[in-house]
Image (tube, rainbow, N blue to C red; front, side, top):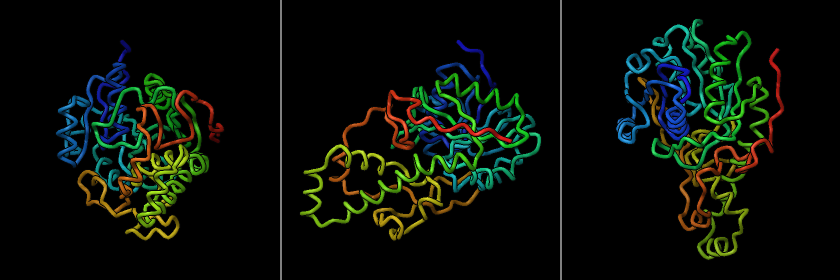
Length: 317
């Protein structure tokens, strides 16, 4: 059993990524206590029922007591709300990180609310499935996957080393980039494939019935992969890549998108961001059953080929 790296870890938003990290932390004994901070009562209840955390709270002040690490697992568009809610309650020496798929927006929206005596180290695990919620997590999600940390100039080296060690112990491969370079790389390897998938599947969803049947009949593995990617949550993507829409996304013709409010940040009003594609179930049935180790949220790497798409290291200056 590994020696715990942290006494308490607080997960802000107990969805797919944070619940997976919580299970992995439990599996490897990396913290003594795990806490979820979430305004969704159902998510808190489920998280406690399945035992992924020791406590699930809606009050930031209470949830953040004694937390040596805070992991923000909310949509990128909610980071400012989260920052306003948690900033006043962060204790000196705490490490704050996130799991968002873009980094400049996180630095811009969350960074101003992090006190100077708290270590802010943005991050992005290139892992995930199309499933969401606390029941979708599993401890092996990060094994053999890349985790990119984007520390800012002046980041405390000891804090960076400690956070890096946590990700290594849950099985991830570490890479350091600056936020700007990260966003350029991931726009190609992750965000653009999502946008293409939403476009193709959205177009198929709009076809007349007889044409739709033929699409389903003659679909091959390539189309099935698109349906798998398109089933993932739009809300986790950058609003710069997937514009907020009410079914009229001009750039993607993804008219099957719908507006939905993501889980609101603690003590903050919810904001409207795209949620799931509303897809004809016949089209989605074309997708094959997925192995839990397959990756649809970040699709640059295939199962068993970690490192095939190794991102270029960018040294901070």
